[in-house]
Image (cartoon, rainbow, N blue to C red):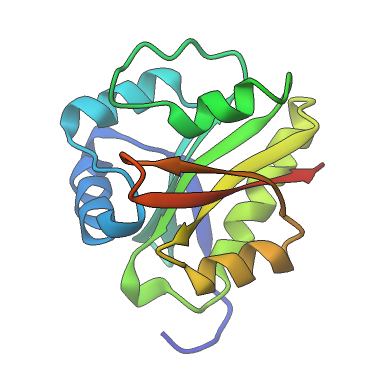
Length: 172
């Protein structure tokens, strides 16, 4: 896509968006956790934000963010969220932002984070948190999050010790 002014819409994920969410998640699963219909339904229950982002009317991305205080009762979820829960009494955790390939490098990630940070301010949460893979190293994501002011507040090994993540936070 060429640089231009885009009409961006952010809306709750609806049933008609599920196939898009599952497809884009699967296409990027090496940097994410897997998601099936059952996990998608779980996120719909626990997420503060589960949104689809449209650019000029086309589905382009989705975001899942979870507020502090959510009881995690799914054995397939929660390692990173729990890490932040043990250290921050109030936060909004960005579980994932996934942008479909044709919509990358147009500034959409920054716009989504602006939206998340504004939402955090509106609900009175002092931190937005996330993690970035360091083993294997996700250079693009690291540079992006550093540019937005997300600083490392710890690290942890996940997925049986095969992945290391940089735990990051930004004061809002």
